[in-house]
Length: 157
Image 1 (cartoon, one colour):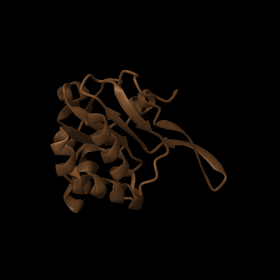
Image 2 (tube, rainbow, N blue to C red):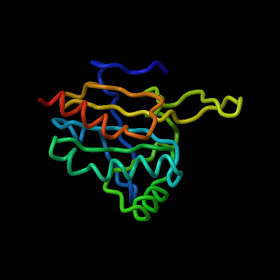
Image 3 (cartoon, rainbow, N blue to C red):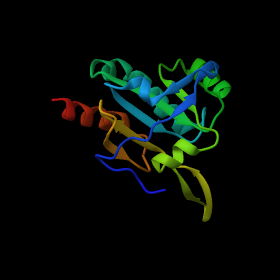
C-alpha cells in the first residue's frame, strides 16, 4: 500500500476498542486527531510510546486534539494494557490489518536479515476536515510525541 501524504483524505474506519465498543474516525469530525499505529501491547517501545502520549493528553486536549492508538491486539489485550499502565488513550483493534493497510502502516519489515509482514510504527495527524496534515512512517519512539505536538502547535497558530 502506498504511503499517505499531506493533503490526502484520511481513510475512514470503524474498529472495536475496549469492551468491543465501536469507534469511528467520523466520530471525531471537526477535531484534530492523532492516529498512531504500533506493533504490540506491553512491549518496551510500544509501552514507552503509549505512556508518552498519555503524559501529553492534556496538552493535546488544549490543542483540540484526540489520540487514537491502533494495533492488531484484541480489545481484551488493550484493556489490560490500559489498566496496567494507566493509559488515557483510545486504543483500537485492527486484527485483520485492513486499516493499517489503508494507511500504509502494514508492510514488509526486516529483522536479523529476515523479512516478514508486520506493523510499521506510524503516526498521522488528521485535520478537522479529515485530511492528513502530517504523516510519519518508521517512527522512532524517543522524542516523537514532542515532535507531533510541535507540528500541531505550528499548524494551529
